[in-house]
Structures are given as C-alpha cells and as structure tokens.
Image (cartoon, rainbow, N blue to C red; front, side, top):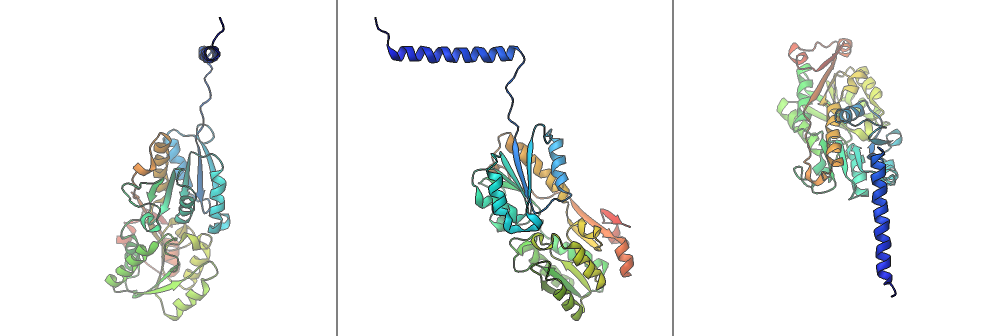
Length: 338
C-alpha cells in the first residue's frame, strides 16, 4: 500500500526534531552550553567627560563588565558639532543595539526623532517635557526615559550664592545662549528662575547673548561698559563645550566674580560652581539600562530627578580677585580648591 506523502514528511520532521533535541542533550551532557548573546548598547554625547565614568561605575555595581558581559559603542559629536548627531545616531542604529544612552538634550532629540522602537535612556537633560522627549514624567508612554538634571529653583540658587559672596553687587551680568534655550542646558524655565531671583534679590540682571565660541569678546566689553559687578554664566552645552578656559579668562581679566553650573569651570579657574552632581546622575542612568535589559519598558519607567549636588569654590581665584568668601558660604561647599 502506498504511503501518504504528508505522513512521510511529518515523520521526517519528527525525526529531525528528535535528533536535534538529542544533540542538544549530548552537548549539555558534555558541559557545552550555547553562547549567550552579550547585550550591545550605544552611548552618545557631545564629547567625553569625567562623569561618563559614573555610568561605567554604575554598570559595574550592577554586575556589568564592559567587554565581558556587555558591549558599549561610544560615539561623540566631533568637536561639539551638534549638527553631526543625526548622522551619528543613524550609524548607531545600524549596529543592532539593544538600547541607546544619550547625553544632553540635543543628542536625545536626535535619537528620539530617528527611532520610536529602540529603547532610549537620556541623561543631563534639563527639561525633558519642554524639549518634547516625553509627554509625562511619571509615565513616559514612549520608548524614551531617563534622568533629568532639572531641579526647580537651581538657577535662582546660583544667583543667591553669588550674591552672598558679593553682597554689594547690584548689577550682575548673565551670559548665555538666550536664542536657543530649548536645546541648551538651561531651558526657558531656568532663565525665568534667574530673572525672578534677581528681582527678589534687588539685582539688575544684564543679559548678554552669545551664540558660539567666537561671540564672547563683545559681551564682555559691554559688561565692562555697564559696570557689571559679577557674572552668572547660564548653562549652555551647545555653546560652551570647548570655551571654558576662554570665558573664565575673560571673567578673571575683568575681575568679575563668576558663578557657573559645573565643577569643570572652577577647575579652569572660575570662582564658584553650583549644580547637579552629574557623576551621580550617570550612575543613576545605569540602573535604567539594567532594568530595560531585564525586560522593563521605558514607557513604564518614570523620569528621575537628581539626588545630589556639587558646590565648588576656588579659593585661589578668590584670593586673586581680592574676595573673602564668607564662612557661611564655605560651610556649604562640597569641595574647595585651594
């Protein structure tokens, strides 16, 4: 009697499946286990900075060792050229990533526009809602989440500390990229906080716009003509990435007590820096990576706020400017450069 060809096909598939299972059993019996895929993530920022090590440390604390059980593709915008971000994002998306970490608002927006599927975790973004990265901080409802570095009132706190160091100052120059506030590290809300604080402190805030590293000489000449008594630099990652030494040099040459947002400025000779502890922010980012690699959805992970802050005082600069830092201010410092 002729055999049904369907039955013969079914027997062949059954035998092939049985042999495959038997082969896996033999491999397991010999101690050979199929290799587990190493997660591959991308990391995108303007340029390497010291607080990237916070991210590495956070991963190590969670058991991830780069090159062993996790692979990281590090990418930067060459020379801080933010227009390069879309191309760099496209390059990263071609690498079969499991997740993309983006540092700064500009990098995060470029990634958000390029993909609605790959999980994105951002850091050092001041206003994720205003920038359009998420629609809800508590439940992002998209493929994007992360750690914001925005804290209500931090801009006003910077001006308050500067005023405590220079109590007689009534004319304070504010230098920033005031025409591109959505993309810089301050945001419109940060500027509004500074303006409100100035009114409360009886300070005349003299705003000076600078769109790039070649725009600083004019504003500083104007500050001198206006007889400014102190300087507050409004954070702007897109403008000031490679210009810290230049700005600090101009401020000290003009003998303007200065306030900045990050410790790098005081290391370059600036007088004061108060801001979010970005090293710790990037350690927090590692916990998001861990959760997503273990199956969590970005849409279900609330955007976190920073939990620690840096206040750095450069006493060498204070002495050079002839300024005595009040003891009440020194006691608030997390670090003093002597």
